[in-house]
Length: 250
Image 1 (cartoon, rainbow, N blue to C red):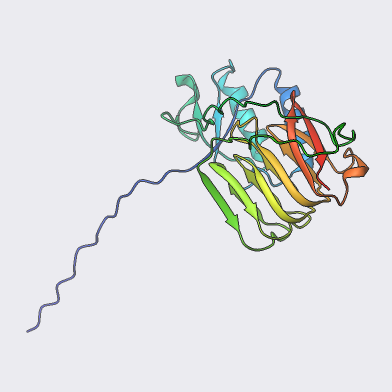
Image 2: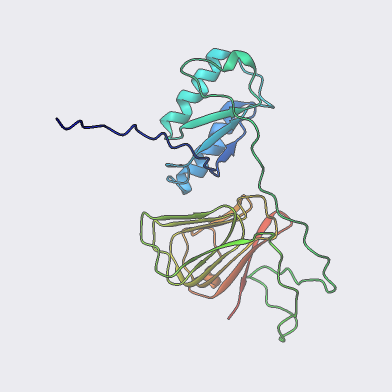
């Protein structure tokens, strides 16, 4: 008689880190949702299929209102995977679990520049016809994602821990989301988000500007509000005193 011995199943355990977006609702929630809806109108798929954590540290909210908040977020296709800073009354069955120990992504301090960098919006011509010499920005990002292909409509390319370089165009309806800077060696017709990890000196460079939206560090400009002079040109987009400045490169 031959005995068949079944090997025991192996339980594989491993750790896995994810980069999540953290939303911090503030009172009044009506105004906060109005701002959120404005953002989603410009980029409806920004939060789709992404880990979302709610920071409730500055929000004093009752359980019923908290359930309503989660329901209203779900209606906008924002699924909350966990909460930070929540009181014990807001953690329980059928509610997102409390999460701790997350590490906020922040840039390293940039070295001091020996020469000031000219910060001039696109609509003004530089006074000096010679290009200014400036130290390249230090975004504090050590990871660069290189995409050696065009980004098609409906695609989202994300690298919250560093820069993104696209060798090709970014089609209408596509999104590129970077913690640092974004470099596109082609036309941009979709939406570009740079500095989403709090890097204030992040920049966007593209060879042909026809974007639906440019955003750096939360400040944004849409196709409707963009300077017509920059359309189709090679541009640099950066923050200047909390507002976007678009500089035509050629």
